[in-house]
Length: 296
Image (cartoon, rainbow, N blue to C red; front, side, top):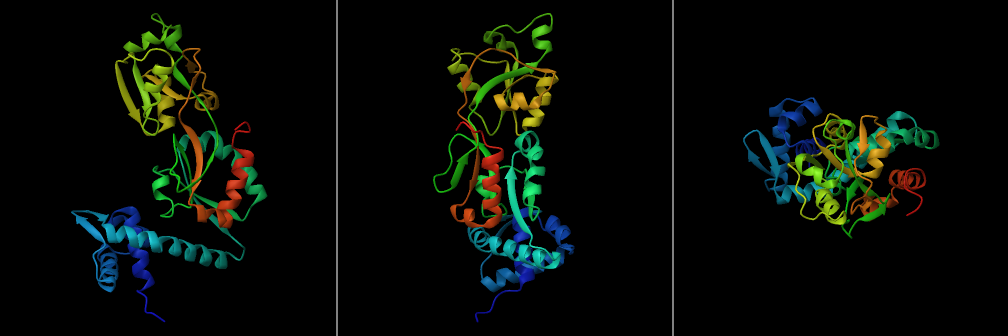
């Protein structure tokens, strides 16, 4: 049998690659930073190639490191699951799911008790760090993302179709200088989600105001924070109809009675081969049945 590097060196490499820091990985593995560095260096010596670009306190994978991580991280995760299942005394299935926080709080978490009742053996590791599609196979088994288009090399299932709403504080229509028409947005700040960068420009074009410019455009990477910013009067949020309806926040109102179709949808995505894995298949089938819109 061909000799393999120590498993502890592989584990150290994967943790450093995922966390981008020797210190953070050392804390995760309950090691000192020098001890963890030695394990990573031992793997580099075994392979006879450097795996990281070293930049002061941070480490960044080089091309060889990226390739190695893609090859061995799924196997290490599978080994971890196997050991956990054996030591728990029950058949345990684990899914590493990437999901945006707003979708998780509005649409996923309220339904999860039903999934737990049906499949008590399935456990979710929920990751809200973003960039879900790019991390499939590297720490994530599947992801729920919001996007216009999906890489054709991935398996994708659309979960909804939506319309864009302009969402603002109730005070904007009840105050002394109320917002009555889209041109009034020229004195307000537009709030736009980084995962939906074209929402405002697409809305103004479809609404018939292609030259409309707000006072400013502020970008957020959190839908929850966007809704709160709008409620606090910090701007008007260009978000999806489902976001507004699920928020059920009396402080917020839809500013205009305009129906503008959104270019963006929520999607379930995974690598095609991952769909044959039981945790992914169970979650996918339940999601489509219980959470996805029925009129797609």
